[in-house]
Image 1 (cartoon, rainbow, N blue to C red):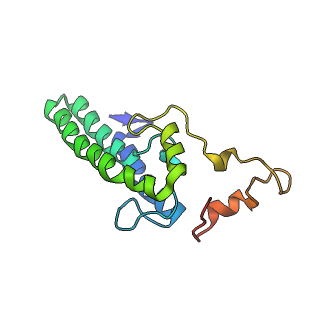
Image 2: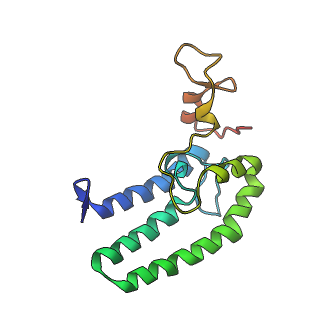
Length: 158
């Protein structure tokens, strides 16, 4: 099966790579609990769905089951999804709520856990008014947005 002129598995590989790179590049951390991010990651695929890595894995398994007509793969997708769902409910979400408070609460109110949004969520950083900068320059709380996004140092957004 092809999507956009290339094999569908390439899309999964690309999505998985983005899911790991975005948290590491944006907030000096990884998706792994052993080295968590220092800031709430709300960019890339995280603007559409709160758990894009789990979603891409399960969708890939479902797609394989449908393409191959294999009921066992469809059953396996449920076996993969259920522990992920329980892990999200029992560990990930409470940990993120404790770490990021109201910022995470507003993110959860706008971005679904499992079914992706049709349009990307626009967080406060993107909605920031243009002020204190040159014409056409985006500024948020006195900091140039392009500087925030390119910075290698952790920036705590309050």
